[in-house]
Length: 488
Image 1 (cartoon, one colour):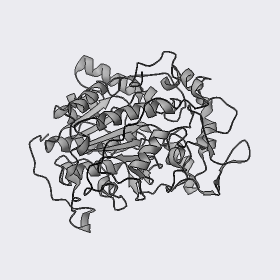
Image 2 (cartoon, helix red, strand yellow):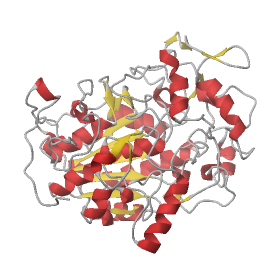
Image 3 (cartoon, one colour):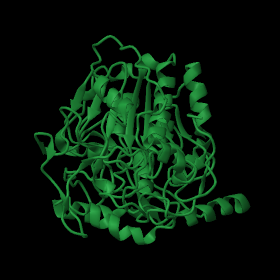
Image 4 (spheres, helix red, strand yellow):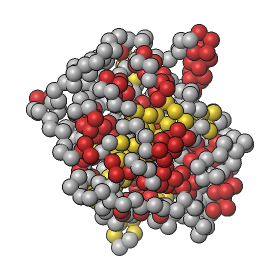
C-alpha cells in the first residue's frame, strides 16, 4: 500500500461537466465539526418550522395521513412526550415506509416490529394512543434546536446518505460508502447498504485483535481520513463512552445493551476497522469525548471532527429528547466558548429517520440512496442568520465541504485519490447534490456566540416519564443505568 505524499489532483466535478472551482471564502473555516445525533425525521422535529418545507397543512391542520392497519388514517400530530418509541429503521423498513413514493408505511412497519419487543417499558412496545411515529415536536419540546435553526441555517432537504440504518450511515459519514469486503484489498469490496458487520461480528473482531493482532473484519475501501492524512490535515473522531444505541437486528425495536467505548469498534465507531486507518497509524485520532472538550477549551481543535454520543444522550428512542438536546447544547456551547469559534463550522445532524413520518420522497442517485429526509443545522459565526436552505442535500455534502475546504476539492474518487477501490460512484460529485457553502456568508463579520441553557424543559408534561426511562430506555431495555454524561 502506497503511503507517501501525493499532489492534489485537479478537481473535475461530475466528470465531463468541467473544472470545479472551490467556493471563495470557504477557507475562513479552519475547523469543521460534525455532531451526529440519532433517529429523527425532518418532519418529526421541524415539520412545522416557519418557512420550511414541512408537513402539508391548511389552516394549521395536516392535510396528509397514513393508513393504520387497525383502521382509519392517522394524521401527524403534536407530540409533547419527551420519550418516544419510534419505529424500525432498517433497509427493508425504509423501502416499506417510502412505498414507491406513497410515504405511507410508517404505522404498519411499527406494528409489525412490535413482535420483537423485549421490554414492556419501552414506549415502542406499549401505549394505547396514536402511534408516535406520526408525532412531531415543536419549540415547546426542543427550544434550543429551533433557536439554532432560527439564528443560523436550517437545511430542509437533507437526506440520509443511505436508505438504511445507523451502521451503514456512519460508514457513509466517514467514507461516502458502505460495503462488504472479501479481503484487505479495496477492490474486493461490494456495495452493501445494509451495513458491513453485526454486533456479534464486532465482538469476534475485538477478541481476534486482542489474541492475534489481526481483526476478522476488513473495511478495506478508502475513507476520508486517508485523504486527510495524505494532505496533512488533522482530524479527530470522538466517541462518548456508554452504550451502543441500536440493535444487531436493525429492524428490531428493543434488544440487550452493548457497551460502547472510544477504543473499540461499534455501530457508531467504524473507523477502527478501516484498513487505511490501521496502515497509516492514525488510529490514535479516535478519542474519548473528554478530549474534544479539552481541545475546544484550549483552542487546539483539529481541522475535522466527528462526534458521536452514547445511547443515553443520542435521542435514539427511547432516550429522552431533552437529554439529547442538553448534551448537544453542551457541545455547541463548548465550541462557542472556544478560541476556535471564529473559524468553525458545526454541522448538527441526525443519522437516520428512526421510523418517524416524513412526507418528502427521497431522490434516487444509486442503488443505496438517498435515504429518508433528516434534520440538519449549520452553526457558524459565518452562517446566514435565519436561512433555510432548500437545496437537495445528502450527508455526503458534509464530506464535500471538508474536501473543498481542506483538500483543494479532492474527492474520494478511485481515479484520483491514490488508493482505488470498487465504489460504484463518487457521491460528492453527484449532479443533484447541493453545496453547504450556500449556508454561509463569508463577507459578514463573524457573529457572536449564541449560548443556550442546558437545563431540561421543566414544563414538559412527561418529564417524570423521561426521568423514569433514563435508567433503562436509552439502554434499549437494560436495567443498569448508563455511565454519566455531560448533563449530570
